[in-house]
Length: 298
Image (cartoon, rainbow, N blue to C red; front, side, top):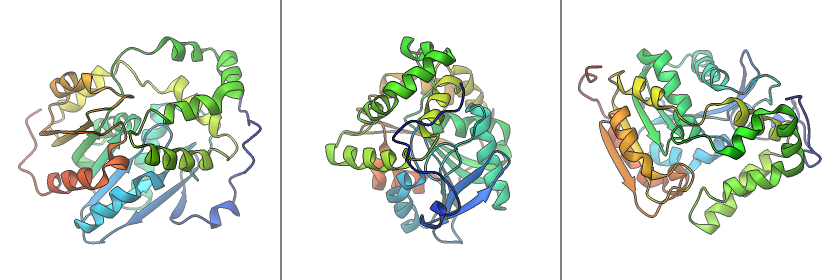
């Protein structure tokens, strides 16, 4: 798809706009990444890998809980999200896995690390673990994408011309409709929409969103779950019981393929458990990251 800017993208990411947000920036091979490394320096490091739409501020409440439990956190915005660059390349799995690998390398963060991925970020985290298993001490997967068949509407986006038309004409409405299904609590949902909407005022944001829908394999990823399960990593699986984006009906399949050490279903919780129930997820994660026995046999 040819790079485009829609009418309500009235801001441009540059040195001036990047003076305002907290956190730090680093230039990687595909572009600049916005990140925040915080929490007790002596604590184990949890790397937080976000989903399809979210900026790093999504993780704030969970990070605070993890800090209180003695863990350090690295949160970052994926390319096309938050204050990270809108790249003009292909928004596929390789791009996001490369960003994660290069970011941790550039910051010289000693492995192994606790890697946490939610939704699409769970797929990125698993793909990263398959490429760099020695860098991962535990893997936490929350409401993972990757199962079910690709919806007919999304299959239509494989056509660049049609995808460009839909993105320009209906992109903002489709984005906010997607966000509306993520969180059960209306007040939290409004906060989420406001957070993402603000970040999507930067040029190239909807381009990045639709490029990701086109080129990132969000469905039929059983092989990735299976190969991750065979790594022998300690895996924590967390799911909201009212997840309307990645339905919990896939729980048994994920459990069979991923072979998690622990599985927790959070009641009265939607798709974004780290955002909706940060204390519950934080406590589960902090307890899980205490020293484990040796890895399971692959």
